[in-house]
Length: 396
Image (cartoon, rainbow, N blue to C red; front, side, top):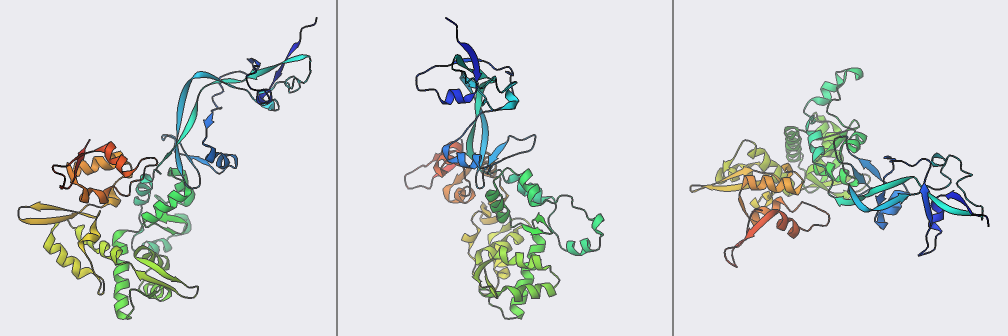
């Protein structure tokens, strides 16, 4: 009796195999390491994102790559396996078949043999992580927008303009490992503004000058700080010599929109944001005695606003030196977003923290799959001398 011939077949042969059956395998003519082929294991909820090409891989050559969807960031990790995983290409993939007719194996007298192109030592897995946005702060801090820059740039020819340290949206997407939504949220948190196509943070002194002029104009024109007409404010600030873009930006940074009427947008200055701004400006000169700080702070606060020390949670630290209480700047916005780095800096600042002091400096930490309690267990030791005492946290 004539023996059946062997015919190579692709992945379709495996897909059509019934349960508990077997199939012969053989080396594909192009068998090899094929380092350009890597398996990726996906959660089912991510499958549509991948199939519809709504994902991107982001990272520089010296960084571990991350995979980003529209709203989330995932670390990409290789996981080895002790089992042999065979990769069998489809029979219609001409790049893997020297003769596609030989690979079909439709002859009923032929025994189907699956051709293995590669043996995979493992696969890539995705783990959701917090966006790595600390780099964004570093990039935008190189060249903040300063007073008089618009005038200086107008005096230069287009070919002479210097764009060193300036980044457009596509530049930031390439540099920062975060999804588009997370990147936009980070830009908003930094009070960044798009000027001439470039995303910039505005120099603190310049923002102080614009805000101070807005408050000055509100007194001259008898404007209510709860009902600021955007067009009137911007027009007045422009006449004072400030670019229209930055005049509107000032309202976004320190105000809240209360009426989006097409003809007349109305803003209310946010009491806390304005008060915190002036506290920061005072403490840039160094730590102060609590009494003198409070006196100067109250002098800076616009009429009609009420400042309280509680507003400065996460912005200042106090310490007792003899009989005096001193206050100094220590802003959560200056701390890294990585939990390990954040706690390291906090415990260098103070070996021990009471919960009421620590909480403002860690409540913004977001680690997927890890609660605030989990963060404390991982990075701190909790002690409580008595049941009714305030818990104290130190480095683990």
